[in-house]
Image 1 (tube, rainbow, N blue to C red):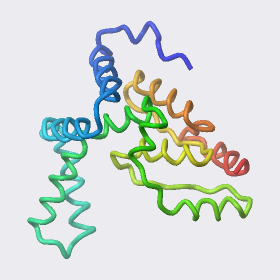
Image 2: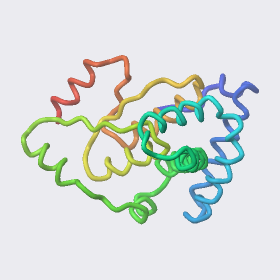
Image 3: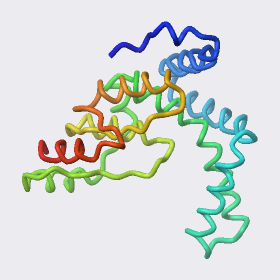
Image 4: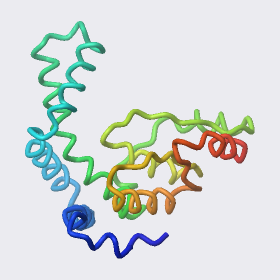
Length: 189
């Protein structure tokens, strides 16, 4: 899949290219430094993510009514700090080597997937839209062949890059608007 298109040379994509370049470079950093940079980035970007923060605060309120306001506020703060790790973990899922990824994961519960597959049917794995979603998908695909869902982003450059790497590490990509493609993938197990 070709990422480079002459339209992506337009100045409106320069910041995107810079972001992608920094993401790519982050793969070469030690894991501990990646984590520190991610938390710093989360703190730096927090003022620009107020709408996400309000949504997260409301979700915490609904999910954990028994928690004190102070405990929920601390959980919210921690969540917002980890938002900065998302681009680094995404970069690791796209450009990290299998060896790099293997050193960061402990698999638990794979026997449930193996059991479901042994019955001869395809399975659907669902996840929340968490910061580690890309990484989790790549790690599962190291163990089992899988198709991945894709919803187009507003940025066409990031669309191309994400689509390329999701396709590279999977059996294929299913657009969110194509439920029949999901049924075909399930039939292939």
